[in-house]
Image 1 (tube, rainbow, N blue to C red):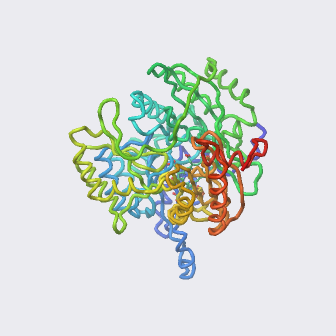
Image 2 (cartoon, protein in one colour):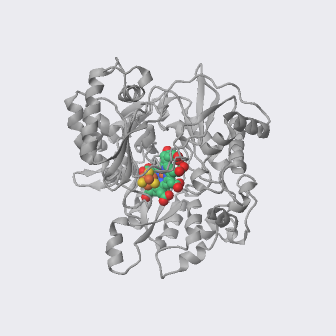
Image 3 (cartoon, rainbow, N blue to C red):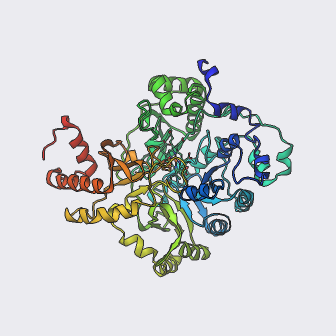
Length: 561
Ligand code: SRM
Ligand code: SF4
């Protein structure tokens, strides 16, 4: 291929890594630094970890002539986002022993722990292994955590769809046993050489790849932001197949016009699980073979689709699967938010969705959320599920056990917090950003709660306090908190400055657009005040803020105040 002589440096690191082992073993043994070797920093991602440093302490460390305070973030692989109560207890213990102690629910339905020192990596992973948990392929140029509509109460067919998430995750795991070799000290794995991997070969994918599955009418997984989006098609209460779309992705780079956020385009419908698996596999092989390996900014599947054209991509996939997609079937999403509080499913089991602001589970003064969840886990009467809105569902609770869980939810203030948080707060998402994300240009999860507190009186002024307006903030344009796919998106440009995006829809079917650049907090509040005012004055009956502002930004949509 033409790119052969112009490969990005990461391509060499992957192919020369001996099945993702690199020199990680040597890096771990080096006591002179808290960091690992540069090439290994790329490889460790495939094992579900990132090298980071405490950005709040950079200046202090430099002043003391010390190296940055390096540590590692570990992300679990949890397809469909599920843990048993015992696993939660184990996770709580691991978080306390080896990380900052904060359990972070991510926007892809899994868990991250931050601040793990190099010497703690192995004990952490070994303890996870005892809980039957791993972090394989949670990061890196491979398929990431497969997301799936979270709440089993959404449909009697949820279990089947959840199981599909697990099957896709297994199918797309790299074949190398390096993870066991390096972190678990698996004697057998040490004997193994780099293993054959028909899917990833020795070069893996050009870039990360994400798969999500939605069970309509809920689009809580924000399905169209995935490289591969599956939408369960349910007709007459039967799961008849899946619509498959491809080419979603939200990352962009300020000032680089060649990069953009994009929602996935429909390829068509397939009528069996076997065909879904085959189609997913071959969509990935086409990306593997045609994706850009020179410029990592342009290497996601969305760019390959736009290069080949949706028809071209579909044809190549059909050639490889040996069957054709049928025309996409009808589907309707009616909501994207989580169903907070109690809901019951078709089997009479109860589910309580806990509002966790930006996925941060910790104890703070007056609100011992982490302790409360541990006490609930210790009853052994719940499972834990995670949502792509960074929340947590206490699940599968029997009628007999509900009163006990309810009592604990009240005792630890969890019910009160969940039930009394304002509508905008409960529809807010923020990425991690500072102090750990090396790419952050501005704050996100540490700042959005305060900003929402300042927006709330403005909402009240216009009678909008119960309106489910979605607001999402990211510390940079990579979109980890899916800011380009919200009614209000705030995207960091510099410390304390954000671009304001508006006009996204409430269901995740239309991206927002940039409205103003580089706003300070005062300017954000002023602009929102103005927008809420014209919204209440000019909206059509039942028109959401996102639809109204889309019309406002699009003159041909006949905006009238
Ligand atoms: Fe993300 C990179 C955190 C979901 C797009 N993301 C990062 C890194 C690893 C920074 C880095 O590369 O050094 C962040 C680590 C911060 C930290 O300290 O923890 C990071 N991303 C997150 C999480 C934890 C945000 C959160 O607060 O929940 C989410 C973890 C998901 C998971 O469990 O797997 C997270 N990231 C997303 C999403 C949303 C989603 O998938 O639903 C996106 C947008 C969708 C997409 O992929 O396009 C997203 N993350 C990115 C990108 C942009 C990729 C691109 O195509 O340009 C980067 C940067 C990169 O890959 O170079 C990135
Ligand atoms: Fe970091 Fe940017 Fe992702 Fe936020 S959006 S976690 S700042 S890479």
